Image (tube, rainbow over all chains, first blue to last red; front, side):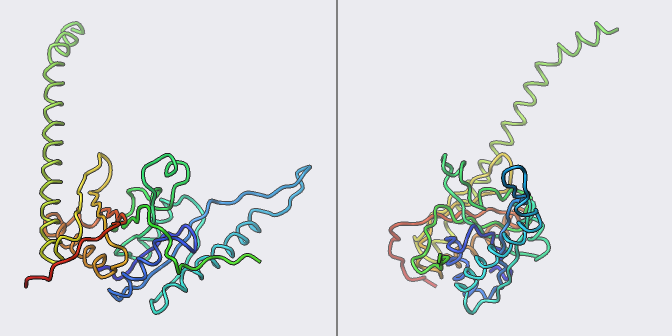
Length: 153
Length: 120
């Protein structure tokens, strides 16, 4: 049974979370939740006026992703959880993080091989073959009814 | 000299093509047999442990590691965890390096059949 599970998340209501929660509880595993975002660019208004620099935008996206991860971590109550946010190519970042975490298992959700899966891939669809640990993909899983969701005010 | 080399190459080309095709065919056959053997071993292991709850399908993509696709009842977490352990241990017993890079694809199983009690 895996003792160190790395989870590449799509969002707080990612359907992989309840499954990983059950696996971690059953096997006494520790979990690292990660979110990989594309490197942001400068946000500009008309006449190329800078609204936010790349660093500002990165900080904003990191905060938002961190709150998503905190919501997902809440569903893993009783399991040792770490969270991390990375910027860059998902396949490369997941492989690097799996090596750094010394993961026994990399988990992510994926879509069936359809046009929708091609156009809107989930993290599992983009994890390449560079990961040295076993990869667990949850295909077409539905969000759990009690999965946490982001509140909009 | 050049004419001789070209003529020799042209004469050997059919043999090279046939040899390459034979090698590819042998590799495909070995891979297919390996997939069948792994699928049988996994199915037997799951059946021994949990009864007829899941039916794994083993494939080997052209690029990438072995892929095991399993429809599982997500509501029964103990079955999912047990099946994952079984997949890993069974593949490791057959091919340890391959088991360390396996891709396990879980798909939702709509109607899980009733399990039988473990005989042991």
